[in-house]
Length: 230
Image (cartoon, rainbow, N blue to C red):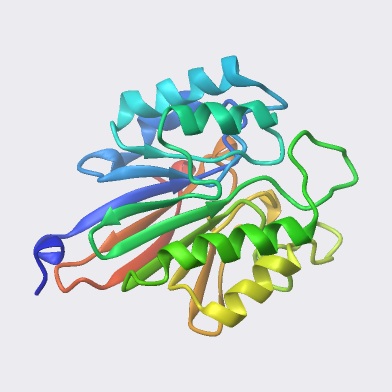
């Protein structure tokens, strides 16, 4: 058994905080967590000042935080997260010597004209760039604010699928172990694309989040949680 798998570890995964970070202290799994992973949307159309407060709240709960912008965060937040050395967007980070986590923040174009929206072509390029840096790790975890198209994790109230085709195609081709996503609040779900598990934890502003657990044998498991059920 590898040294990093010698004891169980877990991470809290959440997104769509929308400035609802005071509820962080209510997450029971925070005790002993190895870190927090944020899929995007720290703010409501906010810039660096608002993002700083959210990240301060996150760090008050756990010193290890990795985060990225969602479509509701202004693009200036991306640069600030990089300066803080906690950015996931277009970046590969190590959760363990054999585990890479990498991200694509923001979203494809929406009807609402939110601050951080990009064409599918950008996501394809960014994902490929990240993969070239992450592919040698035995375990690869993608954090995509935009869920992959055509899954249980990208369905809006009307029943339409509104996720990213670039994220879908990337997952189908490269099959990372897990993809955590967000953005579509009403599509809190677990799904699969090939061998890749897709996880939309739901919006933390409504009390939803997920955990990523590595057991003593080195196997990874995900679970959805709700503060209302604690």
